[in-house]
Every structure is written in C-alpha cells, then in structure tokens.
Length: 371
Image: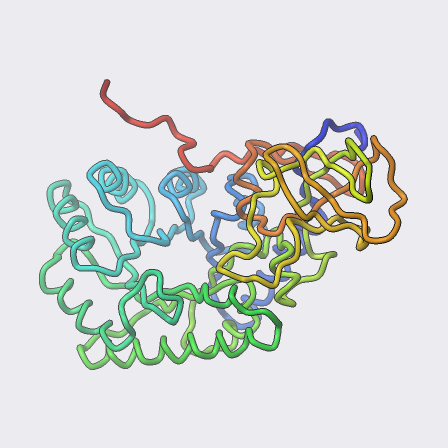
C-alpha cells in the first residue's frame, strides 16, 4: 500500500531512518563502553523497544509505571526515571520488584521511607539511583549533598540498596545553537564529579553514573565517570533537535501525513492540528523554534497557528500545491506528538510496511478504582 492511499492525518515512521538512528547510538555507546538505557517515553511502544534491544540497548529508562510494567515482559533491566509515590503506585512498584530487575530513582528521604515500609511488609528489596541536580532544577539533590542523603537512607532503610546516581541535563533544551551544547554537557559532568566526591566522603562508591539527553550524547560518551547513557528523542528526532544542531531533517523518522484542505489569501490549511502536532515550541522554554512543525521539502511554508484539528500555513512566496495534495510534517517535539496516537504506520520509502501500536501511553491501563 502506498502512503498516498492512507487517510489523513496519519502518523508515520520511516523504518530506514528509525533503524539507522537506533544503530548509530548503540554503536557509539559500544565504542565508548557505555551501557545504553534509552528513555521510552519518546515512543511509548513495546515494538520499538524491542527494536532498540535488537540494535544493542542494554535496558530501559521509563517515564511512567505503565511503561515499566509493559517493558518488564521483555526481560531486560528497567530504571524508573522519577520518584513515584502514593499507595497504589508503591503497590505497583512492589509487584515489579518481585518479578523483574528494576531500579528506583529518588531524591528525598520521604520517598525512600515510603518504599522501605512497603518493601519490608512484603519481604522484597530494590536498588535505587539517587537523582542529582546537574543544573536543570527539576529533580535531584545538590551534588555536595549526595553523600549525606545516601547515608541517611542507608541508616534507616534496610530494603534499599544504593546503586548509583543519575540525572538529566534538561537545561540543554534552552540552548539556541549547537555551540552551547558542549558547555551544558561539561557542566553536568562537573556536577557529577562533585556528587561522586561527596559520596566518597561518606564511604559510598556509585557503580552507576547515569546521564543523558539526545543533544549531549556525543559529549556524555566521552566522560570517564558516566557509565550509562539514557537518551530518548534520538529514536525519532524532531524540529527541536534540528534547531539545536543535534540532527538534520534526514535524521527525523516520525512525520504526520496531512492533506491540504483549503488554500486562499496566501495561506493553506492542513487537516492536522494541535491534537496531532502539539503546541510545543521547545521542550524546555526554547523560543528559537519557528512555527508548529516543519513541512518536509517545503521551506516556503510556515505552520503559524493550530486549532485542534487544523493547521494554518503561511505561504512565503509561491507553493506548488493544490487542495488534496499531501505533505509530511516533522513535529517540533516528537515525544509529545507520539503520545497523541495509539497507532503509528511504519513505512519504507513510500510503501506501508507495518502497523506499530503505541501501547505504553499514560493511563493505558484501566485504573484500579472502587465505585
């Protein structure tokens, strides 16, 4: 089936580009003897996770418990990216602790104590990573407080075993040019050094130092401290990565196939709106992104506004398009766009090859409630 026969809007992934992205990062990690634990919140798909394993991934970093529970069936180690609290979430974590290899991530004594209480009652143990703030200011203890926090947890929580430290340099997405990326990466590496030194003062040696973001991979693999690389967006790439100089258009695997449904007054309308492309203009306050997606092969077009189901596109000059023509739009933020759909169509060239289920989206499991 040719993609021109598909109903629009449709979410597409170019399998050749996807597989190339997966292989390139896996080979880079192997070359520098780093473990690769990709963040699965980007694609939300067990099928793509399986492809990541085929290409050399060592385990997974998950953004939700739904992702972790689904990926547990693949039998590889799992890291939870964030602290998850509340009785039901902790019960889910206890069930995972009994059935798969996974590591918690936490940055407070309160979360550690909640896990320890539940684990003690159920007779299970778990390893954990201490989240360290390397400059993003979201999660994490200050680097010089790492040792004190681990000592406090170790003295009070018998079921938790310290495995290492982790962080995400999300501030890199505030950069506006490629030359700034290395400075962000190097600053985060310095923060890790400070955290390791703090841990050593208290007698702790982290076996794992886990870091990563797609824009900083090339610097992260060179750090002698970092043991685990954890990028997410590299599977698809997007306009944000292009703007940062971390990817080119030909590295972007995911697009939204849309049809021109109207043309007048120097603009045209596409049948893909905010419910396909999202309203992101930068993952973390990056104001260098122009428009709401990039139309492949049409530099003369700018998506300047979105309603829920329609994109407004300005024609800068002339465009060789007419009503009924189809275009492919690279989303600004592929992670957000992928979460908009339950199905993505795998293509090679212009031919449909397979259907990929996005089966790890948030709330993909029926909630446990008492009515």
